[in-house]
View 1: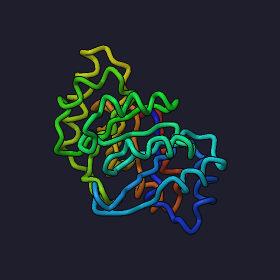
View 2: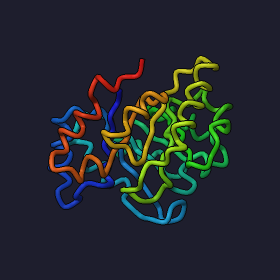
View 3: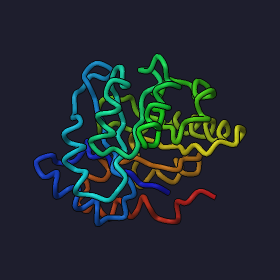
View 4: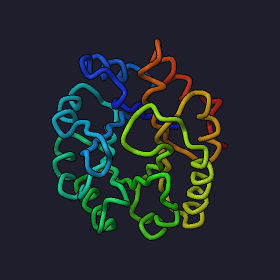
Length: 219
């Protein structure tokens, strides 16, 4: 089980303290949601934030690009310190080429898909995809409730990966809480992203511990 808190929901006035807390916690990855105001109706942050947190943590920095034409910026995010970069299938005209571009820069390559995108659209890129970021909310804003239909998609994607004998991991992003993480992992998730559940809690480290609990491990 990989737990990746999303700093989208963190207090940016205390970002250094937030990263230091995550560094000490049981979190595995730090998830960074980059939005451009075009692909999604919101604007967040870019390369300077990634570069600022890179010296503060040994954790894997997972950059989720919710932007148009992400291939223009992949090199800059890799240089800033990203370890994993996911791009949206819906935003890439040449997805296979973009995934190879990410890998050539030494990063893990991920494909993100919106709730309405069928997992079958991934069939011909799984061979070069390290992980799929399956959104369980509509992209653009934190704090949204989990879309239950996503559980079926997780199971479908798990079957597709197993049928092809791929090593692709399944990351689920959106509305994850200690209350629903068990169902998400049982459906087939390897990585869970949690933002509001972690950073709106009185004890974020305890929530991370609950998400990481072995009792949620998938057989």
